[in-house]
Length: 334
View (cartoon, rainbow, N blue to C red):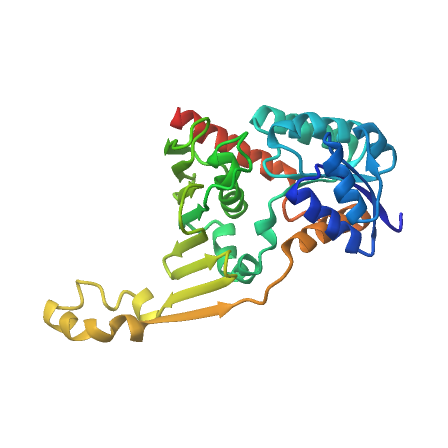
């Protein structure tokens, strides 16, 4: 296989983006676009020089793989049809709306020996990638304190799910990629302003090694933000996914050696050190990381997995774990 024939399922805003990226990839042939709304599929297909498909079966007949950007509540049914047909799949988040359905999809992909990747695009954010050396300490098992906040205004999209599966799911997947385990204890709460589903949610997760993650998500905020802060004994890494910046603060060897502990420093000496202590004993480095197209990187990873067996940076199995945790959070909220 020299090129991968990819079909797009869902011709909304995100489906249009995926179609454009597929059209521009030199190892992809855009095989077609399917959406139950004729106007939508025709518009995206014509814009990208491909075929508007009247049915999912028509799309699958012409495709080696699919990218699904349909409504979240349709993900399981569509994903099941794609995988059962033997087609590789990149599924936008959330993988499904229940953990049981997500597990069924990952099991089917495993049985069919198919690439099944989740659309957790923050895994390709340049700020997240730049923070890797620091984050690898957490991946290696070091206890950490993680804070994440993800907010937006109300967009009138993804109204079929609440903010936990809409926004918080991003940070859940990122945290699980660091801890490698699911939490052993969860506390959570939420409020609804617009009705139907939760619009603001808070969750605190305790992991087996003592790591704690505190997550905040809201889709009714005036100021959008996508921020994560990871604290370790030796320092802090702040990741701004929106501005693609990282800010790393590291303690000096003197601090790490407990040379300034209360047992060693009298209050009088401490008073003389305090005005310049943080500046002298902590080093802060802020980096503006070069912008990249995360959707392009996501697509490249998908194609590399299909053609060359490269591991996915956002495997569906971990995305299913994130949904399982999200489901537990929603139970606590209810």
